[in-house]
Length: 314
View: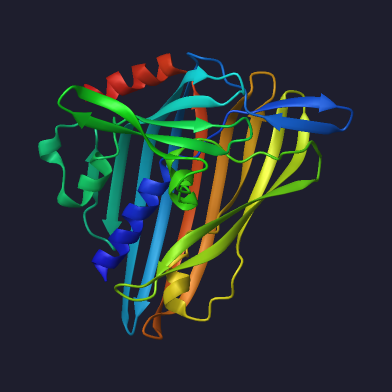
């Protein structure tokens, strides 16, 4: 059961290391045209604090897992074409992680420490750090192209993985790659909403997988001065009668609030939370509860570098 919980934890961390946006809003009376604003050479640095608690019960056994993760990440605007589509280079710079099972000694990880100190369960996390990815976005946050870093005899280059109009990019995968949120095509008033529809896969058997439709609903809640507040919630759009499907989606329905600096055209913070429970997760028996909170903050890179240097010397 412990290995099952850790797999869920690892999946959450890898997916949650990336999901931030840059945004530009133009006011026209009481409506706002929300578009991403990109300037070549610009950087945006973020810190992410995530707390996760998983409780699993089966018969008389009860296991509690507490996970704490601190992440530093950034993106760089590489180029902007005549249509306003931007190539962003994204990177995870540092991850500090602690996982505790019940009252045991926490297992810890810090990516700035030597790789020899890594425990085996943190190997997948290590592989995500310091590896750049490039994604081409439209002004509304649509993924146009994903560029993969590939190595050959001539060195490392970014190569197009898939292109709009050819093989369709897997929506769930592209969402986890980037830092942006979807924006509405049309101008919106305070109180109006727009949707993001995507699919998540669940395992039906060892060889069969099923796609489940999910909808994320964004709402422009308020605009005060240079700050706009957007809330969101997530809904599974298909009724799932089998707990083995629901447990695989237990972390797919978060809600939260995003604050945007309209003058600078950048997200300054995100706060995301989730509290879900599912019964019958082990062949009709047992239960699992997941509680998650994530706080993401735009930071000054100089002060961030100073803090990193201080912790490195400890």
